Every structure is written in structure tokens, then in C-alpha cells.
Length: 70
Image (cartoon, rainbow, N blue to C red; front, side):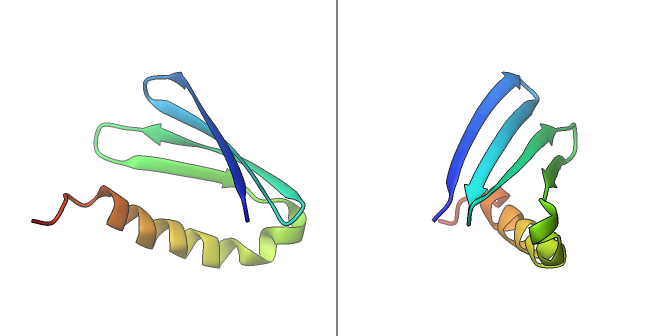
């Protein structure tokens, strides 16, 4: 299970702190004119998972941003 905290220091940036498996990851989401830029700093112990995390963020991000069906 993961614990996620988020804050909005301004209208265009969400700051995240994610704790899972005894590790803490920090990152942010920047809202730009034509895209969202997601940055997540992985601890060294989780760096091997970077390609998997990046793929999941791309795939799930597209799903979350899609217009509702129906």
C-alpha cells in the first residue's frame, strides 16, 4: 500500500510525496499549455523500476486525461 500526499503551491504545479515499501519518492506535476509534465525522483533502491514506472504513468495518464465515455 502507498501513502500519497499532494499540495498545490500554485495553480500550475502539484507537489507529490509518495511513501511505499519503506521508500519515499518526491515529485511534481507541472501543467503546461499543451501537456502535463510529471517528474518523480526514484530512490536508488527503486531505480531499476524506472522504465516500468514511466510506462505506467504514460499509459494510465492518457486514460485519466481522456474525456469521459458516454
